[in-house]
Image (tube, rainbow, N blue to C red):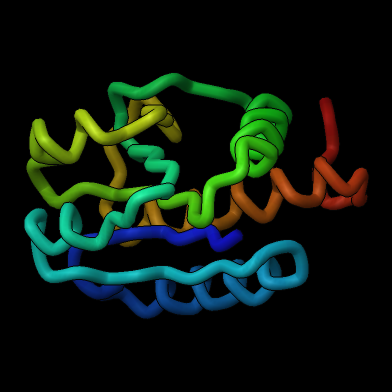
Length: 142
């Protein structure tokens, strides 16, 4: 199984490139992970394959804490998809057709973030979810 962060356009700012590379390397200890950048909504839609589990990262989605995300991730992985695709939309979000294919919509926050920052924030939360599942000390409950 592969986990893909599907984004529109390349990561622009250096801090986001560095952060994304750092967390991608960390995640690779737990799962096959990559970021895939496409040029537009049409290419995002065309990227999907049968058997993919699509999760939209969207401010209108459900908010989960880190432990809930780790539990949800485990359920998704156990459901047997070939790929779990986490998608970040363009400046206008997602097309209705793409949204209709999603099995889940996840909000990182009620706030709006720059697309490059969302990539890093999500990668960190994905890494955190894996460390929670493995009972590793990265995550501390308050």
